[in-house]
Image (cartoon, rainbow, N blue to C red; front, side, top):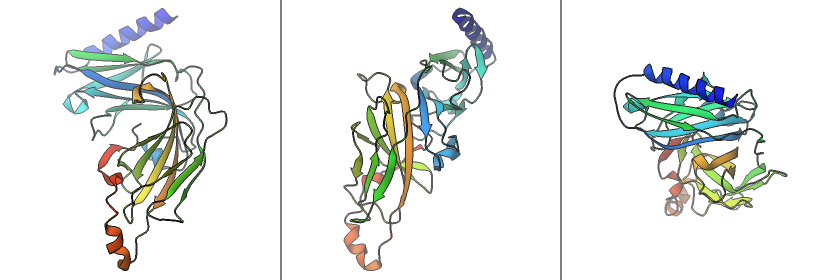
Length: 271
């Protein structure tokens, strides 16, 4: 059965490749991640393809050089058949071009995915890992933000879920709740972390969304990279930094150079 699937995939790849255009540029696949992704409900992530009920999904993301803007096309094959849902995504940081998200569980959704890239006569392909048998990574609980001591330097806290399995990292990702774009620098915390305190003052009036991620790696001996994620869960909390009275602006101006607004990074639907 497996040999038949491989043969069918090869034939399908060949037919699809022959139908593509003729502008040749060598293709490099910089990374290709495929993992079980559990997204919390009631977040802006839903607008980017998440499930409105917070159900887990299987997510493929990848990056090629050259990307779609330079004529590269992509197609996904699973169990020997061409499957839909693979789309280009905004790429402002050079790290994400392609994405495919499908609801899990579902027939065949966790079996390996073959993604083919073509640019004229040049081609490349990746085969993802088999996710069969995995259970979803649960979300953190009790997510809260305490701004009682300092509204510009709040403390974020959460509780780790029971029976979560292997948690390798806790990752914090920050977004503008207005533009739905990632801002600042991601924070990686130990697997046992349950809190994070902002050391620098947040900009007044910032409408912030904080994403707390639990990450389970494929290979614990390898670095925390997109293509080494096996399971991930994402929980969100919003916080609007207050705007101070005019009399306090001079005092606060010295402390508002937070790196959190170090520029717009990848769109929120990235991993």
